[in-house]
Length: 428
Ligand SMILES: Cc1cc2nc3c(=O)[nH]c(=O)nc-3n(C[C@H](O)[C@H](O)[C@H](O)COP(=O)(O)OP(=O)(O)OC[C@H]3O[C@@H](n4cnc5c(N)ncnc54)[C@H](O)[C@@H]3O)c2cc1C
Image (cartoon, rainbow, N blue to C red):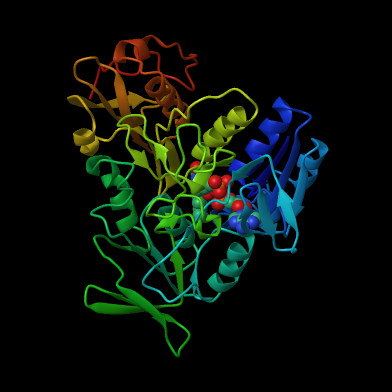
C-alpha cells in the first residue's frame, strides 16, 4: 500500500510515523513544500524571550529521523493538486499515484480587506516569516497585531518587550473570546492594559494599505493609524482550493465524515485542514491547535491501517502564560450553555497550589445540573499548574462526575501540592 501525505508538520508527521509503525510494509511518502520539517509556530515568541537562539534550535523533528524509520520525505516539493482520483501533481512536474492520500496542508492567517500579504503585512507561520519579522522588529517602533486570540496575544506579549508601541486589535467584546468567559479573562485584559500594549476591543479593521512612507495605514472606527509592521493573527483558515474537486465547506475547510474521509473515501484530511466535532455540544467547529492535529492524524492512520474508528472530536484544551498569568481552558464555557442540551451549573474555586505557599489558582468549573458530569473548566493563576488542566481535560473527555473527579488520585508532596481534593474549599 502506498500512502502519500501532503504536509510535513504536526499532523502529517504524526500520521507518517503511525502508519509506518502499524504497517511496516506500507510505502509512506511525505511531501513538504518547505525546506525543512519541524517548524515550531511559536518560534518568534521563544526567540524574542531569549528562550531559543534561532528557528533551527527549535525544530522538533528532522527529515533524517523520518527517513531512519523508512519514511520517504520530499522537501522543497509542493503538491499542485489532484490530477485524478488516485494521483497528485508535484511542483517538479512529476505525477504521484497513491492508494491512500492524507491531506495535512494546514492553515494560515488571512485578511480579506487587504490587497495581499506584503513585506509590512505578515503572517507568522513559516521560518521565513519569523526571520523577516525579527529583522523588521529591529527598526519598527509601532506594530499592529490583528486578532486577540491565542496567536495574537502570544505575539503581543512577546513584541511588547522589544517594541515601544504595540496595538492589539480584537473585533469581539473581549480577548480569547472562544476560550474564556468574561470574568475569567478580565485579569489578563487588565494586565494587557497595564502593559505597553494598546488594546482596541470591539474594533474591526475595515481596510489597510501601504503608504509612501513605507508604513501601513489601518482604517477603523472612522479613524486611521500608521504603523511600521502588521502581524495577522486573525481568520485562521485553510486554503483548500488546490484540492478541488473534493467537497469543501463555505469557510474553505474540507468536508470529512466521522472517519475523516473526504468526498473521495481514499483521501483523508486532518489537522488544520478540517473542522471537527466539539464533544460537549456536537457542533462542528474550526480549531487550530496542535493537539487536534495529532488526534486527527492518529484516527486517520488507524483507519488507513485497518482499525476503523470514528473521530471522537475535541474537548478544546488550550493553555499558555502571558502578561504574568497562566491561563487554561477546556470544554464548555458558560456563555455556550445555550448550545448544550441540558441545564448547566457553574462554580468558582480558589485552589491552593502547594502546602508551603499561599498562591491560589482560580478555577471556574461547569457541569451538567442533573447528572453532575463535568463539562468545562477555566483556570487563571499567577502560578503554573498545567497538570491540573490536563487532568480536567481527561475527566471531561471521560465524562466523569464531580464526585468521580474528586476521587481521582494525585500524588502529594508539600512543596508541589495542597493535600485536599481540588473542589474542597476551606477558605475564600
Ligand atoms: C504563531 C503561532 C503560534 C501557535 N502556537 C500554538 C501553540 O502554542 N499550541 C497549539 O496547540 N497551537 C498553536 N498554533 C496553531 C498550530 O500551529 C496549528 O494548529 C498546527 O500547526 C496545525 O498543524 P497541521 O499539521 O494541521 O498544519 P500546519 O502546521 O499548518 O502544516 C501544514 C504543512 O503543510 C505544508 N504544505 C501546505 N501546502 C502544501 C503543498 N501544496 N505541498 C506541500 N506541502 C504543503 C506546509 O508547508 C506546512 O508544513 C500556533 C499557530 C501560530 C500561527
